[in-house]
Length: 325
Image (tube, rainbow, N blue to C red; front, side):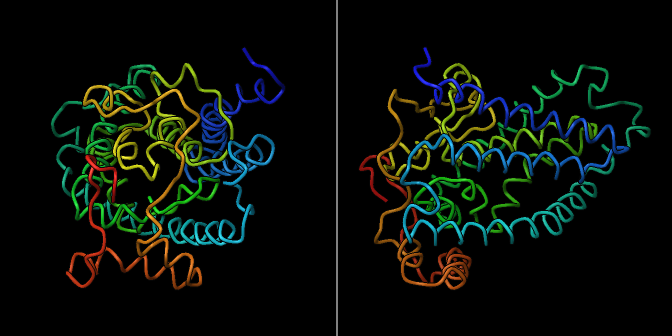
């Protein structure tokens, strides 16, 4: 039972962001003649505003706040730089290139009038359509994410995201530009060939965005019952643990079904991991301490290429048996 006003408020933080914000996007979509960009931006802006508000009023850990220390503030500014470049890259390069590629590859499938069949159950209610989309895309996302952890070439790229030393409103965007292709690709592989409607596609993308903000934020969410079905911050905080035995788990999202099936779900009854990020001797944490945010950004951007070319091997994988990187 809730013991304080904060506990009661925490019951509503997750539903407000995860469900109310996509609902707003849906309303804007229907009242703006199907303007996907306007609907998406309206809902996403509200998500970000609510996350920042909840972090200030209901923080999960005081030491994760953006201004809790000089280094935390510097890390947040670096995350904002990632957020800005990621938005530009995602909107004007990733979506354009992948959409054009998949339309070309699956042109025959998309031309349903030629085949006389429709690959997507448009006559269904939107909710079961979303369930099918979540299960299909989450399967691809699960294995993409797991490979980024367990394949050393993938970890060279994904470790940038796992260099986060605290989680807050700016953390979700911190990833290498190339990883945006890996994150968007599985979704488009499923959604474009099947001809999912714009309305259902919007709800799916907005819920994914909401989950991205929630699981990387420093706010309190009471998701006790949601944890059995949906992917929440309780799963993802352990995924960012510095303890590799905790971090190499919880690959799914936005559901936990594939982690359950493949035995990688990890959710102990504790308040969260002791420490986040990579070990302090590794390159990325050292760069973040010693260099400006711009120099750190470019060093991080180049690091996977240097690893793949054999110029700088660094730490390339994680060993579950020892809990070391």
